[in-house]
Amino acid sequence: LTRQRAEATEGLRRRAQERADALAEQIAAKLGELVSLEGDGYVNESEKLRELISGVYTNVSQYPGRPSQSQIDETDRLQGELDGVRGWLDALLANEVTAFNVDLEKAGQEPVSWPSQEDFLSGDEEESGSSSGSLYRSHRAIYESHSQTPLGLNWWANWAICR
Image (cartoon, rainbow, N blue to C red):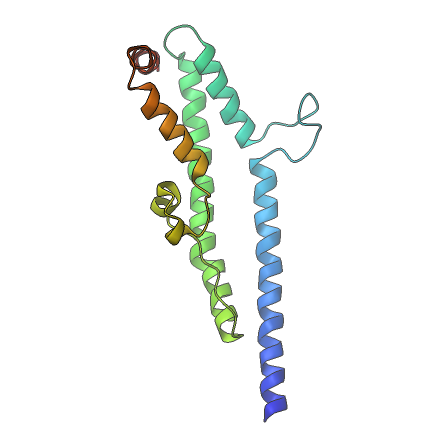
C-alpha cells in the first residue's frame, strides 16, 4: 500500500512538472511577443509591444502641441494589442494555472498564487509578499510631490492639456 501511494504521488508530481514545463513554454513564447529579447539593447534590437509603447510615449511627450491623429490611432492600436495580452493572461490563469494548482494540491505541494492588482499597486507587503509595486508607488509619489508646488502644478496642467 505504501509503495502504491508513493507511485501515485510520483505520478502526480510528474504530471505537475509536465504542466509546469508547458506553462513555462507558453509564457516564454508570449514574452518573446511582448518584449525584445534579442539584439544589443541599443541599435540592433527588434521592436515588440513594450518598445512600440515606449516609442509612442516618447513621440507624444516630445511632440509640440496636442497628439496627432496618427499618434492617437497608434495608441488605440497598441491598446487593442495590450487588451489581447490581458485576455490571454486571464484565460491562462483561469484555465491552465487553475488546472496546474489542482495537480500541485493533489501532489501535496503549495498552489501557485499571485497578488491582486489592487494589492500589487498598493504595496501592502503582507498581502503581496513582495515589493513588486514599488515602481508604481515611486512614480505616484513623484506625481504627488510635484503637484504640491506651483511649478509642478503648471507642468502637470500643461501635460494634461497637450494630451
